[in-house]
Length: 282
Length: 313
Image (tube, chains in turn purple, yellow):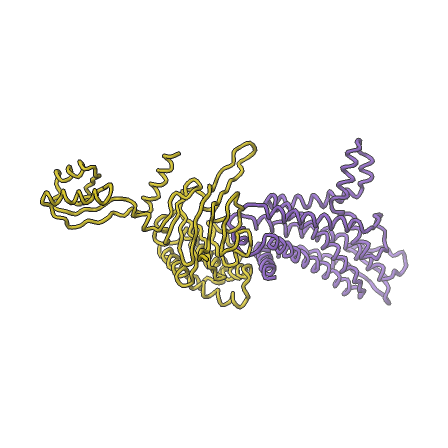
């Protein structure tokens, strides 16, 4: 536990000293302020009589719309945006953790302590995850509070959607750690993690891509890749569906398998990172 | 039962140098021990294997063959580092931390309690002459100050084994003396075994009790400073008269003779040879006023060893 606290302190102090923490939370704050000032709702007797979004009048067709429904729509839409925002911010804020640790003159100071390499790497991982998690909480919590303040509608599912976002961040962070251990490069860790996120998003159309390729083996590669790498598109849809309580359709069928295969990918990435870190000579 | 805190046995290390190329041998079966309270110096030219040895002892690198123990535990066991303090060469204590924060983090990683760390920090900063710098970020420190802070971080958890790689690098002469004193105190008062890795021979000579000279991955010589520097059979002779016939007589006996500032430096085969020269001096009515062995410096011994090994290759 002392090792974990030492790493949490180190990671947070580094983030603060290198402006990462400030930039991380400043970007989030700008998003929250834009969101708060963009929504203007006219609520009469608990129902929405008129709404302005980014200064534009929302068409009500002369009907009074249930405020709960409009809040659900807002929150669902924003949860999908936050899914991307939180994930990319987390990658940028944490991808340096292993490459910096492995720098000559630094790694010796850490490994000369009575700490196993597994413990050191996992402590660093959880410290990074705590940093990313605090930002997810700050972003989602603030937006949730803005919505509650403006509409008096409390939808706890919006907050819980952060759990799925954190799950995706945890998976990508494990992958970033693996790349970081192998290459000792922050830039490569960022590129690989962002690339994985976007590429796996494209693979949501794996069946159509497999049908379009000219060789059987290419189709097999596409299908294998789909099952191996994280399912970022499905998990994004899951965030949306979770927050909206399945009130709106995303066109993506939700099943438990994306969660299971994504968790397996993260776990294997972390295990490979630990194995490589153990084998590495400094 | 031995009081060896560091024990290295038949240690070998080979580095792969690429596909279809023979491996590079960094260590070729070295042995040494460092006892409690001993200051042990590891000497050698660049690439001799000094840093590799220290890294194996710390578990940073795995040996190809042989064994190493710290405090009786194999170096592969993280617990062997529980009471080890390490100051690497060119260490990078994160510049964004203050001295206090750095010591706190490394203290925690060594399993210390917060209260213990709090009492230990001012005590150590005082010892390394940095008390007023406790809350200043390390990036503002000079090289010598960073080095002294590194030493404080290495000592934070009261180690009984200290591994120091060029500890006086960048430190001014006063600071060097203080570091030497601090290391001697640690060894004498707490029984700390100190392994000092340096190419500054004068530092090693002033600090260490015993040294090992590494050359091409092997221990070329090992012993106390006294043993290593006394090996040369050279004597300073002050006598009257020192004239050319006397010098010629000494040379005829096979002795090496050098005139230095009015006295002679004689290189003899052994003590019998020296006594024969003295007999010759007295037979000529000469008066001996001083005869003392000329001690080599550690640098002389080191250079001779390196040259001898080069000739063997």
